[in-house]
Image 1: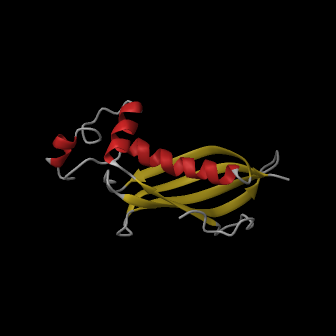
Image 2: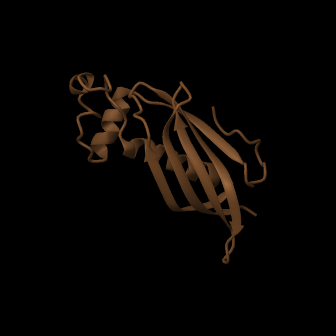
Image 3: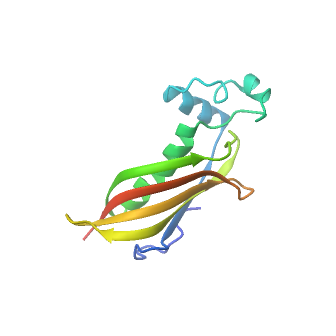
Length: 146
């Protein structure tokens, strides 16, 4: 599942875009190690099975990068984008075998003095149970293609 707004829809408050992502144990382990996160919850399946999570979980770095990457990918298809600020709350673990829905919504838009617009965004990563795993807020400078 990708893009919720029709192609070419105007970017305004309420504009939304989504993507699904399927994690795997191998992907979670590789990402954590590449990011320098040696927490065994992300790469040692035997250790992780003995924890309250019952198995490997994705690192916060992994879930966050997917959410931020979605904003860059989405807006870059329509113009120039530069992320200026992001914050995240890691509310619940994301299991290494989980498929999640990532969603962003534009909450406000303001003209930038040097051109383009400042977009305020609210984002979330939700599991199949519709419970939010990661909550995010972002600000990007977006200049649409002419």
